[in-house]
Image (cartoon, rainbow, N blue to C red; front, side, top):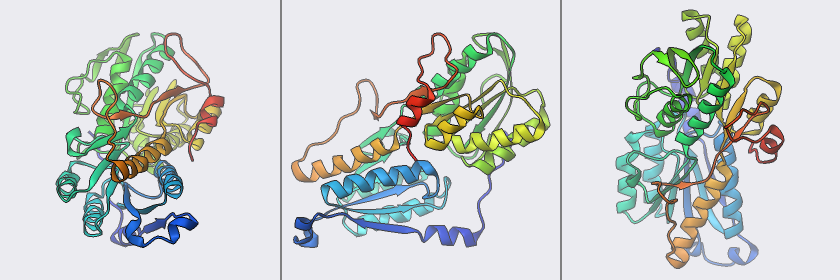
Length: 357
């Protein structure tokens, strides 16, 4: 694989790591109660700049306000900052919070999650199912494998037998995260390309047949799941092969960066697909930058997470996984203005009506 993403400077890390927002949401009657009566919950995201996590924070804040929950929001610096998440987990334990909502960056945080559960905190993963799933009490997330399959199926149908010369723009190339491998391998599976190990990216045959014709995979690039990473990532792969006509991206900021790279290189793509479903991403579908995206629902994930911890404290009611899954599925819809036969989808009018951010 070609490695792209590098860590930011120490100065940036210091500034971003310092970001913490404490939100105490109480009605007038709540404020007359002692602070000991408040249910305290920590929300730990991967960062506080990605629009997806901004939306998640918004959803958690709204539910906390509704229920009178004290919400503490922290994050790592970026998608790779497991040390920042471990510190936030330890802070929640020390503060004796009732529960933790976390978007885990990688398996490096597993031991700290176990420590929190051993201390009596109810730990819920959001968006990113941990590996193994049993490391948390429950996960509220998109079925990321299905999200990948939907855009893969759409891509194969759109190509209509044309050769697929594929660029894969992932988050990492140096760690294992379920969102990363599920979306990437789900996309390949949806195209009809054989995947060897579903938890490993890049081990599939580089040439062969997809459901509609032949394919060639130019490479995988780690982008950090951001716009700059998408731009420079596709630039790297176009330098290897100017015939790329299919681009898979881990999320919409990455796709928007990749669109800019393709335009600058004068390359006309047949397929640019992604996952997210935010307002900017759906507008990118309307404009033609992205052809299809799988929409997920971060506000719902956060809403359900805060409600679950509240219910556990108040009446001992615990949430359950969706049937046949090891997480609670918050749903996914394919959004495109170019529907393909046999691939269920909604248009951008629906997408914008249900978009976050």
